[in-house]
Length: 75
Image (cartoon, rainbow, N blue to C red; front, side, top):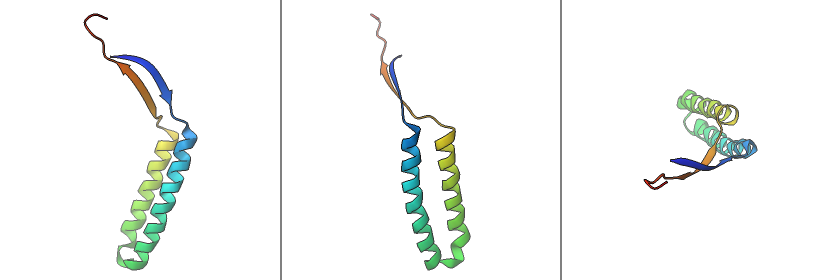
């Protein structure tokens, strides 16, 4: 395989997308805690794991799309 082109995603895209998704999850966690208060710790732990995952994606991982070309016997 040969890399023909690389495109790095804009890091700002992930921050915006993650914020939107996290806000939706946070809202749902609040609803679930109200409905199932005995499971509050489970819901809060899940929310915390999402926060950590977002930080990882936003600060330590780069999203790249590669255009690949399969090498043939002739090339």
